[in-house]
Length: 458
Image 1: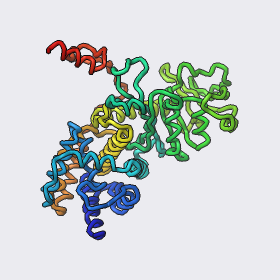
Image 2: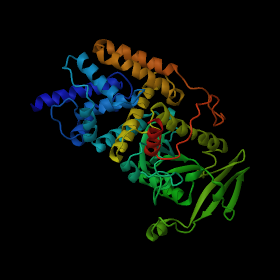
Image 3: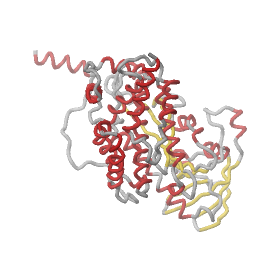
Image 4: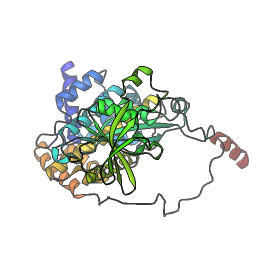
């Protein structure tokens, strides 16, 4: 019985790897190695009884659900039925109950390990050609997500104070760290949008261990604080930030080296409320930094070697920070993670993890296509890659192994054809040309309005 279960598990692993182009003969084919995947599932997957929705089948179905256009559980179960019949297996129930229960049993640790494993391994295998001056650059930014208005979600992730009870939606804050070279998500942290230690800085401190000596961290003006830069220097990490208007250092000592390019000495500010006294004492009293002004914008960085990193290098590197905005847009819009669907906080975190795992798997296929055809992963359209993988997936599973390699080659060639335009310096207004239908805003909780309408039409 144990041998049969292990054989079924290995078949499921092969099928899972086939869906995401993890086969011999392709670059980055060991991001999800068979033995590594089996070890992770055996350790984190839980019970391996011979049931239809095993941990790996549930994970595969969950991934198909987040990649589908409608994101419905019914559509995901229909996909399970179609795959089982195509493989000569028995017909299973079309009821969504067993699948939803299996999602609740799915280990959150399993999803997190797979997510971090895929992102960090892909980032580690990216070639030096894709790196900036031979160094790994990591981008950080935050965003918010909405979810169903249920009592459980409201308690864990309360809505904005400016919204009346019953009229708003729970919101969760997410801070993500991504690779500049390949776009892989390396780590993330989540928390409510209200309360102490729930800001983006607090969440970033939870994932700083994803930085290694020699890395470069690039973020927007919100993150360029004295204490974060001091933390980066202690870790042997360089940082580049746009200087916030409220964080100017008029009293700092300046040494002019080049036109609009200075080295400055930044004095330590007072201890913030979230930091204890012992930690505050370990931070140096002064930091020697570099302040660069380009086209009226002021940047602060730890690149003190003005010959190795020039004035133009700083401007070009910070311009690429915008890529994380596009990555988050791809996750929220293309993968439809902007509005989550689960009704309990523990399932919300699993839903986020599966979305981000799907994102990393798509980025892996894009890296394969880029490496095979000598392109940059950042020049390939993410949405086109999702569309092509969704179209090829059923064909890949039904194609014999002998012909499957040719199909993969065609898939990668099709992906690399769809390239993004030149986004450098693009400016677009945050406005819509097409007018949407005008509906009155909900000013009272929905049950009250429904009762009012019931009396009106009675």
